[in-house]
Image (spheres, rainbow, N blue to C red):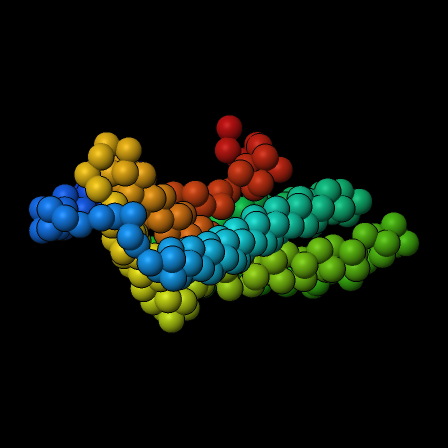
Length: 254
């Protein structure tokens, strides 16, 4: 089942449950019931619960979006630093240059073709990718520079590889869900309480009231789904892609 189909089902289910509860509850309301007699304190409490929950939802969405943006930046930084290594090795002899570029290409190809799916399946970066990056570092470090031009490029290459390793580790830290279970418990309980408070306002079975109640429940379901989707930057529908690697190493993916 696709995530968008799951979203549609969740929103429809939330809307249907609220409408069904309103209709069933309305059948039990006495004939002399007056909905205009709802105490002011109930309206005030309902409003405050809605405001507080809206703030919590906003903070949760901002948090998971910031995490996704950071994961995207780490991926771009990793690809960019490896591209710099391929460019800076130009001043070295052909055999050494070809070996370094071969190591970079092997690592990038593995990340795009294999590791991305591995992260989705296992929630972590793959040991093989770590080994390929370590081989690149070793091959670069083993040959000492032979002249001033090589010396000027040698240390920056090692620095770029260290930066790529750091970005890779940051990518690994962002893999998998990051939202604590206690926060999810609060979000779900808050959603139930917020939607449940709608029933204290004695809404009737008019088309307008039923539509607003259903739309409100569907909106809550959509926002919770949005948080869930952003919570895993590499594993769900709106996820970070390998586009930076593909853009910076076009020869590998044409």
